[in-house]
Image (cartoon, rainbow, N blue to C red):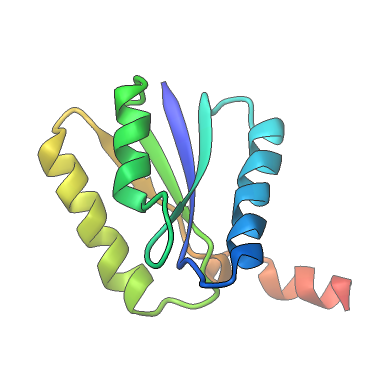
Length: 117
């Protein structure tokens, strides 16, 4: 079983967090090869990334893909997410977690923005 977590920073503004939840719902409808798709947050709100990893694992996921919905490769992307992944895989050695490139790291992003403009 394979799961996808759309991970974001988390905001004091509920509407911002809801945008991430809605993105996860839209991706769940489009990506049938994931049995679970959820939003998760690094700070300020729940569910946290570790909570969602555990939720997926308990539901049977042995492979989890993290999509970091961050524009730049800051401290959270470079340090915090790998640390969270390491902790989770230490707790569950049979769990494989893949960290995708952050939003700003995707090839074609400039082209996409240019087309939108």
